[in-house]
Image 1 (tube, rainbow, N blue to C red):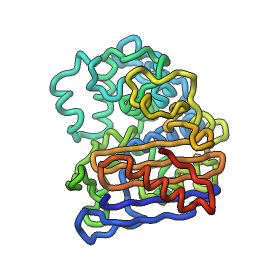
Image 2: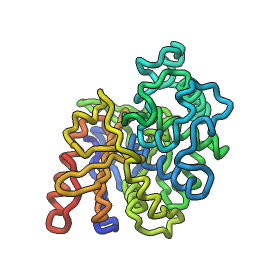
Image 3: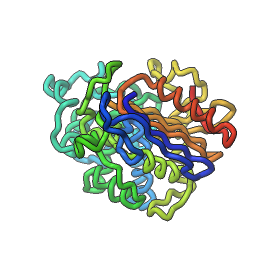
Length: 354
């Protein structure tokens, strides 16, 4: 790994944050704990949290339906009653991405461009939703759990349609700024500072990969943040603080951290092969029991040039967060988590994941 950053939360406090390595492979451009790393699908917890904040303020509900948010949008009937909570818990019946075998009506141009199109995020999300709701669902809504980035893109579009503001503005106004997460933003950090931010890399040879997921994918996987600010966000999910300007009510935290129903993983879901019988999905978080610890929260994330991991023990109010600037096997981060766990064993029983 060119660089590795990590943070440790012990008993509801940020105990340590550290950084090692370089922003660009094979240079002396050293990384710092204030550098911004893409956290990929760990962004989903931010989108679910933004939804919760807006719900607490009365702007919408967990059961707000897609047709309620987009009353004038032409969509297949099976989409109309899909709810926000189904989108955020991967229970909407959607495939992972729009380019799925069920997508029969997509234009060749859309398939070619949806990954590379760099028009405004609002425009792209609206186009994504418009095309998505014409496609046949992969399963009946509420019938099974299947990890879906499409679901999070649609959820983000729902929020901005209801609120009349871009998702990025909503996230900044309702979460980033009130919490003082000054390093948080959207897209590859090197795009904003080519010298003093980490660049992504790909592959065993650590090829520089300055481009990454399009910014319109922010609700699913394109938030960047420093490791210390990310740890502040984790404290919010542990019910710590409240002086930062964002407060999650106890019932809200319970909703975010609990699978909404007993649906099981759809046949073909990657998670069926993880070997964790308790593995489920809440809102922006996997839930699991492991190592004699129950109700842990976990999320991995992988962009084109970054990977990240966070594992949280809400009961003990402990957490481990890591990110690196290369798209490599998550085994590297699993090993790092378990080395940190072993190093801290005399102080605390940190959560870990195999």
